[in-house]
Length: 316
Image (cartoon, rainbow, N blue to C red; front, side):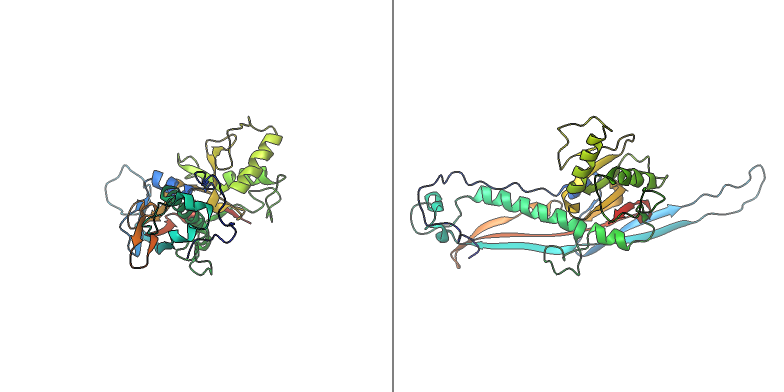
């Protein structure tokens, strides 16, 4: 059965009401994309981001005549969704010899699990946490089953042409950097800001995103250098404004351990799914033929960017 209880001793009196679940981080990136209104729904397999661009050539006025000039171009980038399901079978009878027996109803037949609300909350948060990681680190060639359902932003941005690489001496002092440390992290973020293309640097939705590990290194370096008024409210999963600018630095769980930093508009990110918030929907039911309780969730998800040439990256 799917219950792992080998580390529990057989039942002695314990406080069965205190079934504590650990804290699980949520899918913050997906929430940011939803806030920008760039969720594509009804995607069964793949759908295109349709892009129009146009130029404008100024000509000398004051004369008659018609000289057509300029081009309007239509291009596309594709969001391909991965099809994902989560299924688990639970046998309540396996709990009878453990302290959890006190939460079971009387009798020998069980058609539910006693801690269903705690279980479902934890399962939903775990799915969200794993999706957050996949949104950035997804790679359909990966051997990791939690990462190979769709390609994430790291792979997609890395393969796109036109992305601005800030890890060069023209932007970051001492570049190319081989690691992010307290000694170079301030210069790194200044370099990312410097590398943002002029056409989008003033966009209201421009952000710089990094892992929570890099975020902590950066906030400590700023505090130690007295470069901004440090606040105890700046948590590891929080955000603050890059000193001297109006651009937010946002910490994301999905970038933990990558040493990657990106600057981009939130409106440049797209998320595809079949049904909005489908990953939050699940079913817990009793399968009478198997005499077990089952959990089932199924959803689709994929991501992509529209304009790679508006993105700045530092990938170490």
